[in-house]
Length: 269
Image (cartoon, rainbow, N blue to C red; front, top):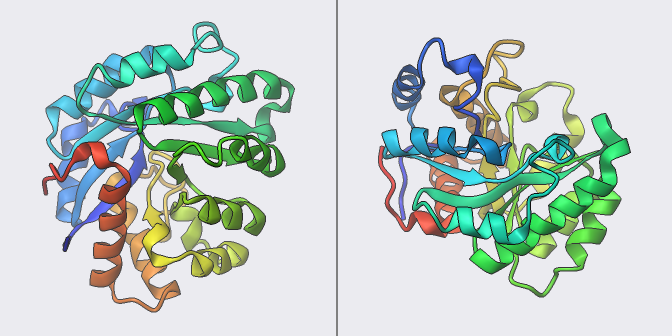
């Protein structure tokens, strides 16, 4: 299909950073910047009602269910199971993915055992539901590759979100069949290695995101991020791949809807 808008494939509209202003204004500014769809991402299962309430209010917003690895050790999250995730995912039509989940040893290597356990629960839930897995990976490339390799022939699909890891992990992920999503980090002048990794990714495996309210792209670096800014990451990605903005917009948006099949084409500007 042909799309004439960007998609923010990963943001956090429920975060307190946006509550005073109101999500409506964020959505309006996104629309003015040709951002036509957004996926607001789960970090705690306990916040499910927040996510679905936002998704229900806006026809161009969807959500997910999952536990961020930095919260995997917390009360109520370390007991999360595959069956619980499957039940929640099947309970609401606008829950279209499993995650974000994964491994983060940069901040909490001491919790790696529980991170790995909860990550496996998410993987198995994604396989059972057929929904894509949204993966957070930081300073854990070898373990990430080892765990995912256990599920190589299980029909698992997903995205490496906010990619800032090594070429080793990106090559593995693409070969596995995953998509690679780039955030505002891609626009930073010193992200030379990331620029080269992005250029190596096939066009049909590229996504863009804000990870808002974090990681605002140039020219907003250091400020609160929001979905309206994803066009800057998209424009930068277009230059890296020698595409015009229209083609990059169409390609990354088409990739999003192909990955998140539960949306079933019911997207809106």
